[in-house]
Image 1: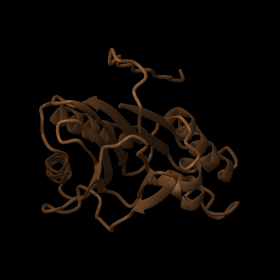
Image 2: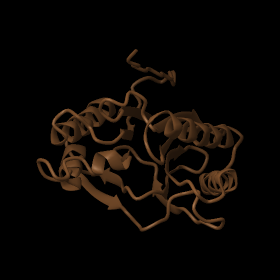
Image 3: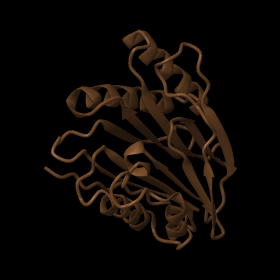
Length: 232
């Protein structure tokens, strides 16, 4: 099997700097993780904060920390660093080869969608953002690592798209797109494009769509690839 990952993101219209940060990191015992951090506010200040938290989470994962422990540490760090006055939302999507499972960790007001065999569901247990309380537990979900599984995470700029304009973003529509068995990149682009259409091409908040898909392996060599597209 292979795990395909793709991230599509865009900043708030006319601001230029996105307050959302994403890190994709290889796990030391096998596998890959996506860290999604939505910093409070917009612009450079939010970006500095979210980038710091995402980098710290990535370093902890690289050092072998479990995802639940990573979420607790970044919460403690933000709480101590900003005296509980600044919050951020955090989501980690992991394919953990060592334990043969997918792991979804959330301290976020946005759900994670899970699809398998043409059916999708939402992981949306209520949780608090990080940074607001000293003792904070993440929502942790373990899923079987099997071919055909798809995870999709967002920041709130996506699920709030269209509010007061052309109708709210529909999770059902996103689930329908997941059920179409698109490649990870096409799926991420389709969902972001849908959110941008609702915002009439002028997003009022930073947006991130992250997709993790388990597929059959095409090469016996186990070739690993990383690609990126970054506008200047």
